[in-house]
Image (cartoon, rainbow, N blue to C red; front, side, top):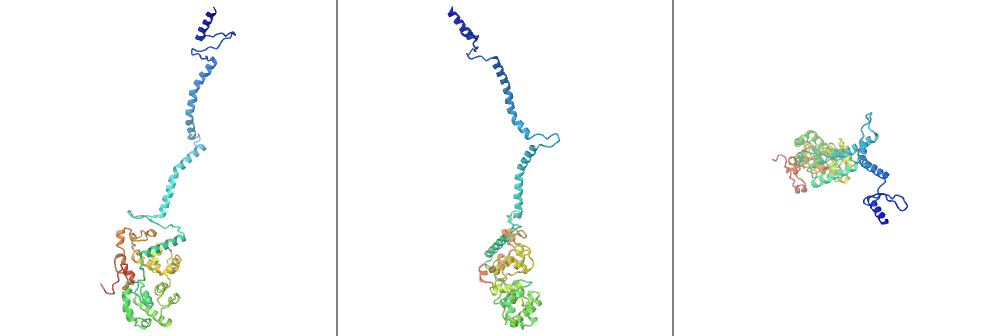
Length: 386
C-alpha cells in the first residue's frame, strides 16, 4: 500500500496537482517544465506591465517630436511668439546672415582698395583714402626710386655751358619748349656771349633772334634787364644764392632752383607745369600754388634728392604722363598711381603715345649728355633742319 500511495503522489505531482508535504500543507504548484507556477497576483502584474511597455516605448519615440514642437511652437493666441522661440529664430537668422555680412565687408574693402581697370587689364592698387603721412612718404620715395631706374640719364633739357647761358635759357623757356629754346640760343650766345655784351645789345636785334620762342618782346626785355643787373650788381657773375637770384628781372623761384641745382650743385625743387601736374596726380599734395607745392613735396624727401627728383618727375611728365592723354598702359609706376586709368590703358595703344627717346624720337637738346646718348637718346636737330 505504501508503495502504491507514493506512485500516486508522483503522478499527481507531474501533472501539476497540489501535493501535501509531510506537514500537511499544500506545496506550490509547478508547471510541466518543472518551474514554479506564478501566483494569480503576480500574473496580473506581469500582464499590466506587458500592456504598459508599448505605451512607454511610444512615449520615448514621441519625446524628440515634443522637444521639436517646443522649439517650433506656434504663435500664441495673440499672434506673438514665445521668448524661447524668438531667441532660437534670431540665432538661426544670425548664423545664416553671418556669411553674407562677411562677404559684404570683403567687397567693401575691395572697392576702396582696388581701382577698376578696363576689360582685359589688371586691376591696379589704389592708395587708401586715409593714407598716413608715413605711408605717403614711403610711396613717394618708392615712386622716385622707380623713376630713377627708368631715367638714370635724367638731366636738365636746356643746352648750356655756364651759369649765364643756363639762366638766360631758363628765362626764355617760359611758354615754349626746351627744344625751341635750344634751337634759338646758339645764335644769341654767338652774338652776345657775356652779360656785358647782352646788356649793351640792340633790343630790336635781340627780338629778331628770339622771335621763334614766342612772347619775344617781353623776353627780350627780361634778358637785357637781367644782363644789366648781373653787370651792375654782381660783377658780371651769376650769384649762387636764392635770395640774390630772385631779385633779378624775369627770375622766379623755379628759374632760381634750376640754376642752383644744375649750375651750382645746390639742391632745389623745380616746380614747372609737368611737376605740378604729376605730384597732384600722385596725391603727394593738393596744393596748387608753386611755392606751396615746393614746400609740401620737399617735406617728403631728403634735401639731397631734390634736384634729381625734379629731373625724374619732369622727364616722366614729358615722355609718359602727358597732360591730355597719359600713356597709363606703358607707365612703369602704374601700381603706385592713384590716377591710373585717366589715360590710355591698352599697352599697344599706350606705347604709341610715348615721346622722345621712349618713343624712338629725338630729344630736346642739340648737345645732350653722353649718358643720354648711351641710353639710346637722339640729339635734337638745329633750327631749320628737316
